[in-house]
Length: 127
Image 1 (spheres, rainbow, N blue to C red):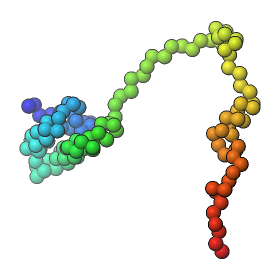
Image 2 (tube, rainbow, N blue to C red; image 1 turned 60 degrees about the horizontal axis):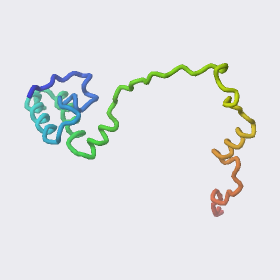
Image 3 (tube, one colour; image 1 turned 120 degrees about the horizontal axis):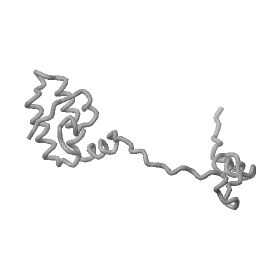
């Protein structure tokens, strides 16, 4: 097993710190951790040991590992967008029409503007 070199940029990804694949089993995580601890003991290299220990803490428990996988930063691949048709190319029957009454109805539906029952807001006041 080839041990990874620790760089400051790999500290965000616990898998990169331990030098394992994202699909590694719990046993592989444990093996990588102990191999790296032997390579970077806390007495000789405390900073590297802290990063290794933090990465292991994130990946050893299945629940914590799921949370780490959900929150792990991944690059976003921007989808290619098709250009929008011009107004001249749109069918006039499908052209969007915005009415003031529609805006007011939407505001009432999404807020308290159309609300008439405020009983839940009233609380008993003691003087």
